[in-house]
Length: 343
Ligand code: FES
Ligand code: FE
Image (cartoon, rainbow, N blue to C red; front, side, top):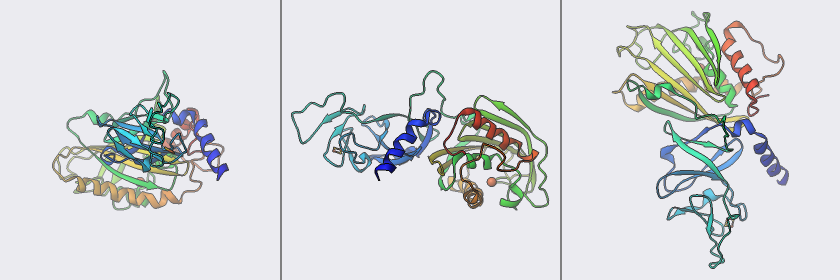
């Protein structure tokens, strides 16, 4: 047990690149009056809201005797440890030790505090301070498009690494097999030429085309669909797609989908999709059901891939020109210095 705990601490401190990135950890509506335990980069993290409803993310380990703060409670805007009742204010400072009512805890009596913010309906956490060149929360341009409605789908807990999930998101050659009758067909398996360019945050792939029997929730006929993919951070990507006109029940239908992944461990992940769709009338559940169907088709194949961590070294997996987006993603990861979820 002691060895296991020591390894966890070492792992977190070595993750300089990943620890300085913002990661999604929960849906904002799931953090209410009681503390919530989440996992991020093999660290246990507690989320809680203070009196002003600001969300805090701390190490889920009391600095007194290591109990999980997430088993405690929030009282008067303070987090109370479940074991001996030490109380911590919103800054992480211990302000009361019930066993010693006259004791004034010094500044060293503090919880370990991480940065947290709300964006895209999710709570984002960064374990290490970012510095001058710090990454932002991954961009999602459609968020600012008033003609698109936004809603989230998930979470999905997936037994594979975050990079395997991003790579699958960029992959068009699986449509005719994994999503047969939906996003592809065995009669249309050719991946037409497309262009990939490197960007500061990853890559952008343009001119991607796919013939899809049912490309979206409003499809009325098979259509050629134009895709644009963007990797917006090591564990995030966005796709935008526009089907042929006359192939949907909603005129001018288009959509943009962000993939946001919480890297729980090197081989397990929690996934959310943020949908931005040109549809302000369908119920949320109707729009989410389509994405749900598609991802549940992906999940068994994703979880079957071995190794679960994405191989970046050597030639352990084979590539063709159809895979150039995933090859570019692997090169980006290699140069980014990310080590969590890769080999
Ligand atoms: Fe938290 Fe003692 S372990 S108060
Ligand atoms: Fe897929």
